Image (cartoon, rainbow, N blue to C red; front, side, top):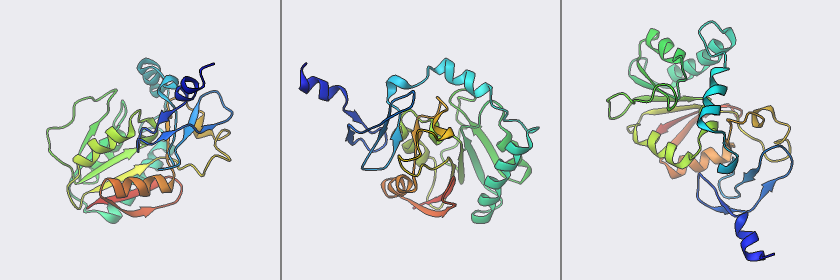
Length: 220
């Protein structure tokens, strides 16, 4: 066995910070890696679902205005935005899904709201920037988090808001049995430390975190 080539085979670069990591999380049906630098837990590209399988999975979600639990979750995000931002303003729901329920809710609340989704609504609105961007249950699907976050950041002016909902991991100990890691379209997992790293790297200030799933940043 060529030990040099064997070692190189298991070297992977973190898709967020670019740091090389050989550390794998044992157990589970997929290969997970943990970056010691930014604390991202990620799935290497070889284990990513195909785009077709990803879309099929999304269409199984009950994300409609007739799902009380889904609407309640979106309402909590909207209340957080209203707490920290102006009632009026332009809002982009980044990753709105096949049925942009949150866009409709924000329009009813007085926002000039738009939706974008790489699978279902692929054309970004013809605006340079938005006062508010929401990414609700989206970050965990990013194949290339650094690229996606750079794109998001370019759409937010100084003083603009970015609200994110994604479940935060608490380390490797309880990761494999965690239901959130069992979804094969979830390929990137963040901790509070990860988001503090993101904030420093992309000139964002953390205004709010519930420590579990909801975070709100303002652009510097």
